[in-house]
Length: 166
Image (cartoon, rainbow, N blue to C red; front, side):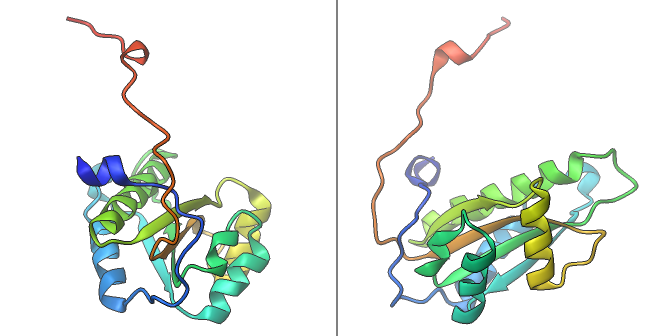
């Protein structure tokens, strides 16, 4: 519960502290442990640590400006499957993304989920940048790095938004 309560969207990172490949692999392992419809695991991931490519993300995605100081990014790519109903793959990508965000907190890292799908223009830009096939969906860009800010919490439990059937 501590990681969930302490997770924040981080938009400023320490550009001098690099995310390691080992840390990225831990984040990706957490992603791949997410539940998926019929255990289809309809995802692929692109891990970025190249400063040049992070700057390219900033250039093509106007809402991913935090990649200017992030030292890594993960692009979640959805691979739709014909053996499950349409739309469930997107939910699976969201579950994988949330696992990354929570695991990052336990590693002392910060993240920011920058949506790509369903914005056609952003999807086209990210697809072109990373040479993602047309049959795959660039779902999001997750900026990753060591936080250089400490935003306040923005959510809390609101019982008024719950209907109980007892």
